[in-house]
Image (cartoon, rainbow, N blue to C red; front, side, top):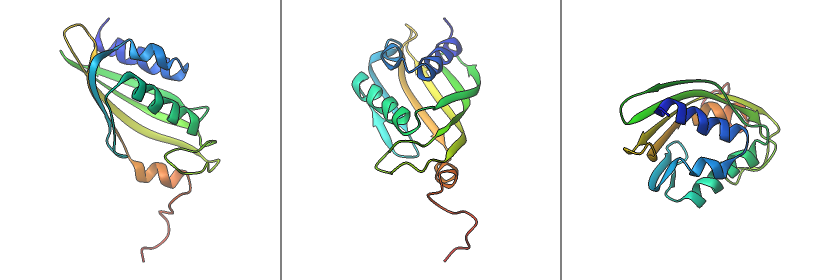
Amino acid sequence: MGHSATHRQLHEYFNDREFDRMTEHFGQSFLYEDLPRPVTIKTHKELIDYLKEWAGGFSDATIGDPKYVEGPDHSVGMFHARGVNDGSMAGMPPTGKRIDVPFCEVLHYDSDGKVTSGELYYDQVTMLSQLGVIDLSAPPG
């Protein structure tokens, strides 16, 4: 399986809420970073808890319109994170609002095709605006 196919499979597992199956594609030692928050994940349990937090905050969360590119030891997934914020996340109460935010995820692989590291990029201001937490139309001050 090529890196793009692995990346796609991981996203399908997320959409199907098969978080345990995702860890099968991660090495025993890895580092995954959600850079906007910032959150660093180093274990399979932390990864599952992190994914469950997203699914808990957005019970209908999906990874949509994905596009993938790959290199010899990495893949890049560009997609839209979509869902209604119907649960708490990162200490924030649910807003009931829908998000549709572009994300970019870079995964790095070892010679066995296991994920050794990853970085997740997205515009947190856009997400908070869509959730109604901040108002971008208000003048500063």
